Every structure is written in C-alpha cells, then in structure tokens.
Image (cartoon, helix red, strand yellow):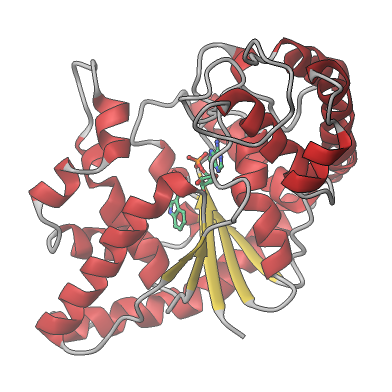
Length: 327
Ligand code: AMP
Ligand code: TRP
C-alpha cells in the first residue's frame, strides 16, 4: 500500500476538469492505497476570499469529494486548516525555498499578472504545497498537468532538506492521468478549463444542471472541418472534446474516431453531452443528499484526527533535525 495525497482549493465551483484530472483518480486510488485527500483552504486564501463564500465553497467541495465516490472508510478526507502541522511545516520549508524558484512558477505568474497588490502568500504557495505532501511520507500525488512544476519543486525541497539535515523526507512521485490531465476551455482550447474563468460557458461545473451542460457542449468551439479525429496540434478543440468523451465513457480515443467516422461534429457533440450528463447526474444526486444529511462534520473530524497523528510526528522530527528545542 502506497501513501497517496492530494488537494483541491475551495476557491469556486469545481469543474469537469477537476473531476477528470483529479477527483476521478482519487476514487480509483483509494481502493489500493492509504489515501489523504484535503480541501486546501489555506491555499485558497492566497487570493482574496469572501468569508461566507469560502465557508460555503469548502463545504461544497468536501461534499463533492464524497459524492464522487471518496469513502471515508477508505480515505482520510479533511480540511487543511484542521491540521495545524500544514501551516507549521509550510513556514519551515518557506525558509528553505529560494526566491528564484518561486519566481519561476507559472501558476504564480498567471495569477499575479496584471494585478497591483499581490499577497506574499500567493508567492510562497508552493512551499505550503510541499509541506502538505511531505508531512505524510507521500509516495504518489494524483494531480493534473498544471501541478507538475509544483511537484518538481516539492521534490527539490525534500532533497535539499535531506542533504542539509539528514535523510528525513520521502521523495514523492506525481500520478498524472494519460488522458484528461489537461482538459481545456470550451471557448478556447489554448487555455485550461478553469473555475476562475469569468465566462461560465468556458467550463462545465460539476454541479451544472443537465440542460446547462447540453447547451454548453453544443456551443463549444470547434474548427471548421468535420472529421472527429484526435490531433491536438491541428484540431485542439475537437481533440479536447474527445478527451472529455473518453474520460467519461469506456471508449478509447480510437473507438471514438471509429464511431463517428464520416458523421461530422453534430452527432458527436450530442452524444458527448449525454455521456457527460450521465457521469455527473448521479454525483449531483448524492451531493444533494450529503448536503442535507449533515454528515460532513463527523467525516472531517475523523479525517483531521487521523491526519494529525502522522503530521504532528513529522513536524516534531523535522524541528528536531533543524535544531529547535522541543517542548
Ligand atoms: P485546483 O482547482 O487548481 O485546486 O486544482 C485541483 C486539481 O484539479 C489539481 O490536481 C489540478 O491539476 C486538477 N485540474 C484543475 N483543472 C484541470 C483541468 N482543466 N484539467 C485537468 N485537471 C485539472
Ligand atoms: N496546488 C494545487 C492546485 O492548485 C492544490 C494543492 C495544494 C495540492 N496542496 C496540494 C495538490 C498537495 C496536491 C498535493 O491544484
């Protein structure tokens, strides 16, 4: 059994990209590994959050974790802020991180570009993410493509710490899906599908009503050709829709090409909408049940208790190695 850890920010509606790139894989991994899945609320506040909205989104994302199939009997589901060791190790690792490393992070460049007041926490975000991972002796980190760079920095920090203070951290590996690691926007296939895009037509939210999903897919941008073929370089939009199709069904990209050969985009998009609706509808139903049942609190309490035991022990070991006088 390997240790697996990942996290999602409660900074808006989760999208189909989050589901395909991350959540769906969590659900598969929990069957064979010891898993830790967090809602990373401390990361969310690296950009301004309205307190009431943050509270609501945190509960909503936790409920979506469970509704997608995370089982509290198999996975530890918790909030990052409930386990104090995250903030503490985050600080310790921040002191080990170089400015130049943080300046190179594309997520920081994207999120800060054009902004006047940029919080220092947005800059040091990757050190906190490294802490999240290293606290648990994590071996595998299931994430989408966009998190590769952060993961690489985590590995570098773990190496650096081990060299300076002696062998302490396990070096984690990414677990990145072959199809669906980067679901793109429906209106622009050069940008990743993101909940922070102001155009709601650019993404499918996991909680979008079936008719909204159908409308968004029918309006999704495609090129002027008519062949349903997978070629991200020359047909980025159709290739993206095909990745979504393959991720939400048991057809491969090749199966999809064969199925729609000579038929044009119309029938393909119509079926795609139904495949996506069939994937999300049962999740939405469970989501509503979970939200009205009040079961979240107990799940989060247990998850945080389990996580704290491991995380506290790691922080103690780290502080000892660094030369802190322990209480
Ligand atoms: P975030 O929403 O930025 O907190 O991301 C949570 C997880 O979802 C991370 O593992 C991301 O890599 C993944 N993710 C977010 N957007 C996408 C996307 N468009 N395609 C694939 N994975 C994604
Ligand atoms: N930075 C990740 C994202 O934006 C979220 C995250 C925080 C995370 N801590 C993590 C992912 C630890 C994996 C492991 O998607």
